[in-house]
Image (cartoon, rainbow, N blue to C red; front, side, top):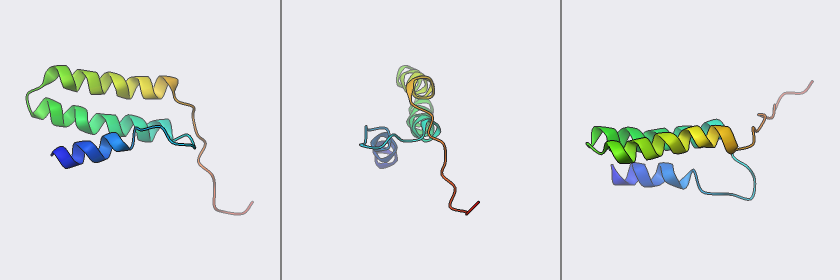
Amino acid sequence: MARARAECLALTEPTPRPRAARGVAFARLVPGDLARYGGDPVEAERQYEAARAALEHQPLVVPSSTRGS
């Protein structure tokens, strides 16, 4: 579980290009769930709050279409 948690949290690190807020939020939900299932409600709440904040404070990135118009 530690590896899954670390890989998800790596997806929340800042990058030169903005990430989609939904992806960042989802990457925070998984460690929150792992903490909750592991019996750590304080860490779970911290991760869930970070997921909410990601949606609130991250720029919304519009998916680019690969199809021609």
